[in-house]
Image 1 (cartoon, rainbow, N blue to C red):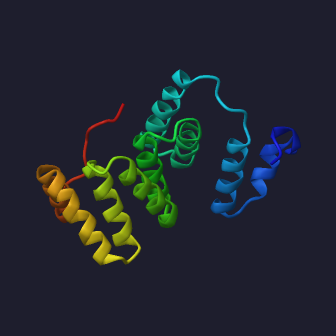
Image 2: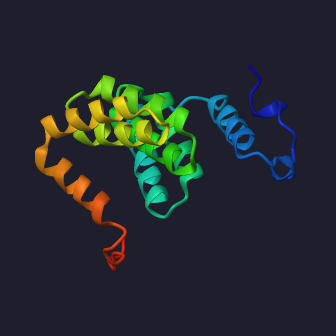
Length: 167
């Protein structure tokens, strides 16, 4: 696979030609995956921190790239898979979101947030039986968190929007 040297010098011009977000995402991930590896594991954490900040500021595509870079260097942590899954879900790419949520569950089956996220994804994909199973598993792991999630889901249309600021 070719590295950065084989890409055109005017990458910005190339990116502006893409109309389909999936093609853009594929190109950006390809560029990321062909980049040289990191020198040490201690330099991985800032990528996940940056991905969290980008997610909080609704820059989902950029957050996916930082999560992917983190996963490329350390694929054993479930946090990056969870965060990338959430960002894929927000962008509407349910298939990739489901894959990453499932991988997160494989790595950390006791994480109720991962089960809730995969349940949301499956519900959006029309897999109501799978969603029910995931929601049920999340409730077994953490009944309080699951209750709060479902209460928020039920009443979100009538409750006022949150006035708190994220940092």
